[in-house]
Length: 214
Length: 200
Image (cartoon, rainbow over all chains, first blue to last red; front, side, top):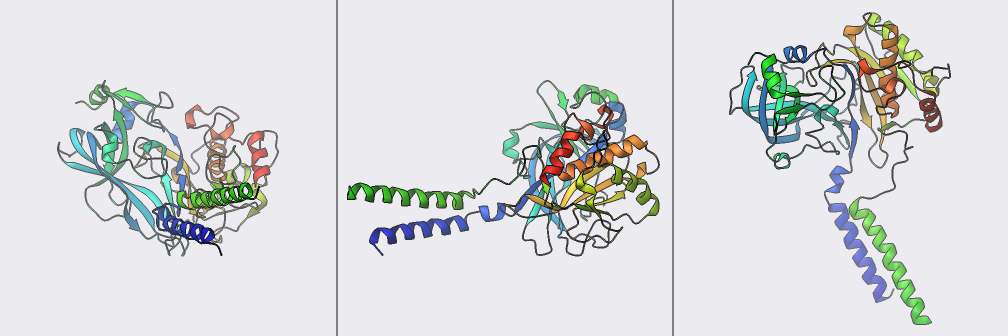
């Protein structure tokens, strides 16, 4: 074997090892899949707001797309004994104003959602779910944008206490959706539209306040 | 001449190793074999099977009617999706689509609106096989015996359409928002059925 050939093999082997050791080994075990739902919007903005016990505005201060893992119940409909745990993510907001509910300005409010699922109990590969209604929060690979990437954007948060609907036994967790508020005070909802108007609903924050008597 | 051949050989080796290294380091592999008409994660099987995991008779009988008949287009042409139905509650880990009814409430905790049905992949093959091994379809049990036949077909068609890989479109049952669906909105279009029959 010539010196040139040995040199090439050494370089190739080093680079191959570098490739194996890179962080892509984690991301390569993830399949991104949309979590799809067909929905019926409420007739009016008022009806939608009536079904949201907590409404606030705030800025994103922390995110974790793999905050919790919970084993599935193998006896529940749709599960098998080999199904891996479900994964839940969180998005935390510093509350700026409270339009409805028991929160106070300055408090931290954390939204929890199902962010994915391990395929098997061995947890060798997982699914990352993406949601249309979280289009402002998620990246295409199912991870969450970092607080810095939101660049100080303010969101309207329409939520309800978790109360066990996601089986994470921790207080002060909420479920809900968020919509960005632009500089003109317009709140634009990603799909699905929360009330009948158009496919993407937009409404002034002042109209939301008026609708709930603030 | 000999020197020239040696340079070509050297360059060839360099290119071959560079490509191999690039593929390894960057994680680039061959693109997933996915027809461009399907823009979601698809099922893995050419021989599709599905099953109900619904334990309550009333829910099972109501929704099973729609699941069975959603696979026809407006002209009566059938897809091959109905090739195999597992018996109720005796599906296995690799059954392609498992459906059941679930109380999805009046206002979904996440979206805040009424969810009629939903679809998600519950078990996937890891990359580079970006396909779903088992998808799950849920119907909102609050609509059992409380929804029109056309809407029932539309919801079943829409969710199973997602499972096989269709995203929203302004055709057939893949309309995005329920109130805006226009007839014939409870069936797959003949074009969608051609894609399904061609791909699976």
